[in-house]
Image (tube, rainbow, N blue to C red; front, side, top):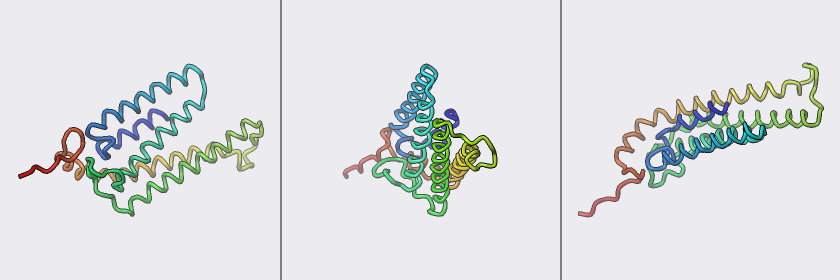
Length: 179
């Protein structure tokens, strides 16, 4: 799951100021360092919360960056100047967010049942299906977010690429030359 989530950031390469220009290297190196450090800690101390926290950060960062990239939020004076995506396509982002939040709530409920030793043992109890429901909702969140990226961001990437050609290495638009 963590490797798949690392791919979410790769989908955003060059589509937001944090994944383009001078910030690109810092963003991707930071995420890779976080991933490596968390894996080392997780495999050393065998604490599942480390994995869960890492996965949460790996989902939240691309979610927020992708929303900002498609809406033009936080792109003032920075490249790429990605034009806002049509609002109709942004619905997939909200569906994905609702799916992952709802799934996480069910997962937390299931974990609390486990910790208290009250997990249902029969399939006729709806709580028996909380963990599978988490997987279904997280998979649907993946589908929704991927659909959002494909319909909202990738069509804009050509426009962003042409904008990047007009910027300097720092990802900032060059100042107008005085005549």
